[in-house]
Amino acid sequence: MQTTKQTWDNWEVIAIKYLQKHNYRILDTNFRFKRFWEIDIIAENKKNIIFIEVKYRNNTRYWLPEESITTNKMRKFLKTVDFFVKKNKIKEEKIRIDVIAILRAEFNYKLTHYKNISV
Image (cartoon, rainbow, N blue to C red; front, side, top):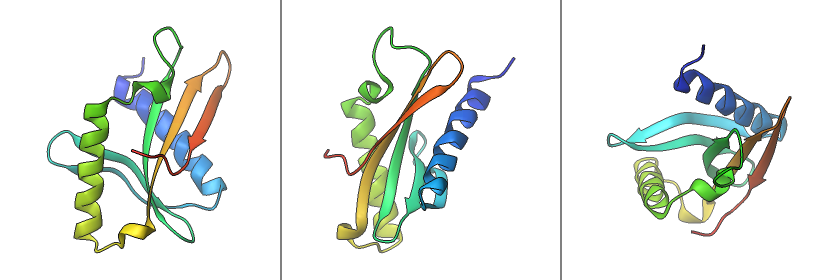
């Protein structure tokens, strides 16, 4: 039986493979700032540095994966992005925030990539 972290790693790998297939270069994963603040994937395309929150759900009983992003989670996410941007001296116009939502289906999964979300 897999632990939660192992299960999460499987979905993160799916998101990374999807991004690589679409010509994104992965710069970092699970970047942490402070104890609980994390960016799931940091990637780069020709124009931008993309900070990606990955959400997974195995059913829609309560909400879709993308609907589980709380205001508090987004605030911490953006503070972590801000830290990374300042630390690496990235121009603000080069950053983009994306969400990858993965919903498990019976024998597969559905991945939805929301690009350049407004926060």
